[in-house]
Image (cartoon, rainbow, N blue to C red; front, side):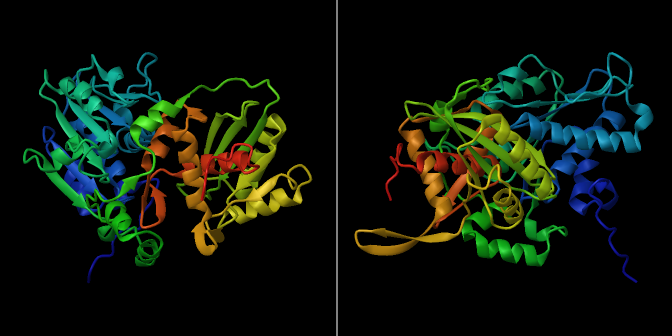
Length: 431
C-alpha cells in the first residue's frame, strides 16, 4: 500500500518536505546552489532550514550564514523561519546569553556559528567588511549588479559558497547586458534546482487553472513555470523609481488635503496596505505614509481605516470592493464618519469614449498609467522605502494585463493617487 504524504503544516514545514527540498537542505556545505522556482513552491522555507543545518552540523566557530533579500522584511521573514526550526529541533544549541541572544537580525549558536540577515539595499554597500561562509540570496533575479559587486568578495577569504534563489525576472538589463542571476543559470559550477508551480503539491489544479485564465501566458510562464521571459515589460523602470522615491516620513501638522488608498487582504499570506497621499497647494502629490498589516479580519481593516481617518481627516478613501474588500467597503459606507468619502475602486472594466468610439478599459490599467504619467512629469514624490521601491519594481504588463509579485503596496498607491487627481485639478493623464 502506497504511503500517504504527510499533511502540510505551515508552522512546521520540515515535517512534509518535498524531495528536492530535502536534497537541498542536507546537501554538502560547500556546494554553490542555483534555485530557479515558481511562486510559493517552498524555496524560502528550504533556504531557512538549510541555514540552520549548516551552522549546527557543518560549520565551526566564526563561520556564518548571511541571508540577503531585497527588503529587510523579506530577510527577517526567512530568519524567523530559521529561528522556529532551530528552536524546535536544536533548542539546546541556541546561544541565549545576554550578548548573543537572538534578535531580528541574527541567531547565534553555542558552537560559535550564526545566521545573520539584512536587506541587500540598492547597492549592497552595507555588506562590505563581512566575511561569510555561506551567502544566501533570496529573490536574486531582482538584485542590482552593484549588490553582487559588493557582496561576492565576502566569500573569498574563507572559501565561502553561494546559494541564490528566485522566480525569474528577465535575462537582460535595459542596455542588453545579461543579469547576474541569469548568468548563474548557465554556470556549471552551480548545482541547479528547477521547481515550477505545477510540480508543487501545495498548488491545487483549480488554483493554477484560475491563474491561467486571469493572467497572460507570459506572466504565467514566469510566475508559475519559472521561465525567463524577456517579453514582459515593467511599468516603472529603475531610473524613474530612483528619481521619484526620495521622500521621508514626517509628522504632518499641515492642513493640506490627504487621500487614502487601501489594498485589502484576508487572513492568508497577502498583506493589507494603507497608502497616504498628500496634495500640496501647488498641486504636487507626496506620499506621507505606507502601513502594512498581515492576516487581518475585514473588521480589523475597517477599524484601522477609521483610526487613520481621525488622524489625517482624509478627503477621500479608495478601496477595492472586489473579493474580501467588499466587506470593508460595506462597513465604511455604513459609518457616518466615512460613508461620504469612501469610493469603490476595483479592477473591473468600464466603458470609455475617445474620438466618438466606445471601448472597454480596465480601471486598474488607468490607475497605473495615471501614476506613471505623474512620475514621468515629476509631479509626485514617493517614499524612499525599500518595500515601496520593491513593489513598484515588481509591476509588469503584458497583453493589456498588469500584475506583480509584490504588488500590494503599488495597488494602494494607485488608488490614493487616482483620488487625488480625479477632481481634474491635476489632470495630466489623457485617455
